[in-house]
Amino acid sequence: MPSPSLDFWFDLASNYSYLSVMRIEALAARAGVAVRWRPFLLGPILDALGWEGPPFVVQKEKGAYVWQDMPRQCRKYALPWQQPTEFPRRTVLATRIAVLADDEPWLPDWCRTVMTRNYGDDREVDSPEAVAHMLTALGLPAQRLIEEAGSDANRARLRERTQTARGLGIFGAPTFFVGEAMFWGNDRLEDAIEAALCPPQNQDIV
Amino acid sequence: MPSPSLDFWFDLASNYSYLSVMRIEALAARAGVAVRWRPFLLGPILDALGWEGPPFVVQKEKGAYVWQDMPRQCRKYALPWQQPTEFPRRTVLATRIAVLADDEPWLPDWCRTVMTRNYGDDREVDSPEAVAHMLTALGLPAQRLIEEAGSDANRARLRERTQTARGLGIFGAPTFFVGEAMFWGNDRLEDAIEAALCPPQNQDIV
Image (cartoon, rainbow over all chains, first blue to last red; front, top):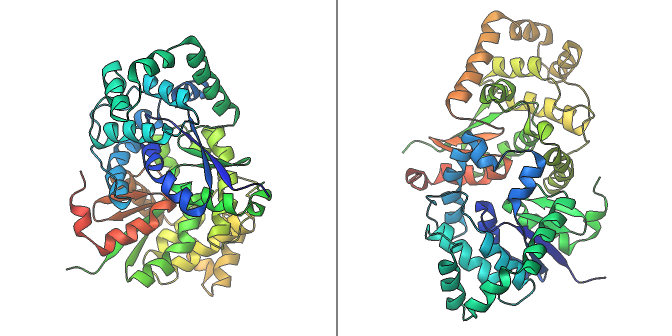
């Protein structure tokens, strides 16, 4: 039997992705489930689906609720929270860095750093200055990584990643996959880990 | 201090309302939280919000996912499940009965009966025959209740109920209220019960 694993698709600008980015490593490690981090950009997918922007922005009532829900969820999970004064924040360079890092050991740290700066401190996370500051704080070669992140090859890698997400039928973030079984939303993180541990439960999905 | 309670707003046609209708009584009773059942019609609210129909119907990718999510949720909660061949099903008469029952002791039983017939047995739940059959099985005077449910006074009561839901900012079902704090979705049922038990946690909602 292959060792249990799941794919974790998330968008660094997404507020519910924040909750999973912060929670997944400890939960998966405790369960003995390997996680493949798959940062992507949700924006182009929503455009392609014809949804006319993030649901929380387009549907004002739902958007208003989200800012009531988020502080409670953060309190529940003991995560820092400050309602961002800008939403969704631009995160293209930060995501290019994440895609460049791919399976580097510092990828989770990078994502947590970006997420807590945006949702814990209400600060922008995409200017070259902010990105350099965060990379340096992680002991990484900021200048070189920023250059590589902006290379044609890496831009193409992010576009491909996002195309792959679309091909998988992803319509929101975070989304987890255990084999072909899709689990949408931070509220399904525990279910996805459970499913990774009990593969027979995944077989009978309609 | 007032005894802990929450308001439970749900739509008898809604699949995620099914999960909460089946779960709430046991969970709330164990926690010592009183539940006010508030059936309403989501359709007119979605119309008023300009959302052009149920999100799971309008947004096909999300809709496809829902039929992957529902059997897993039902397995998790040990609830019967058959994917309905018609969605959303018409439930106007069934909802008028529910509104007529208001705080009657048989209201929860009525809602569970309608829900399990729709989502557990894939059968229609709104014809006078089906409604009479279900009421009779609960030992209730079917003919009289169906007549009263269709009266002008009771139709007006359902319209008012739905207007009240709209005034509360409800945009989906199920939705729970603990005081003014809104909790949207079956995934928030446990949080809402928790909040009802710890009112100070509700005070600092932005």
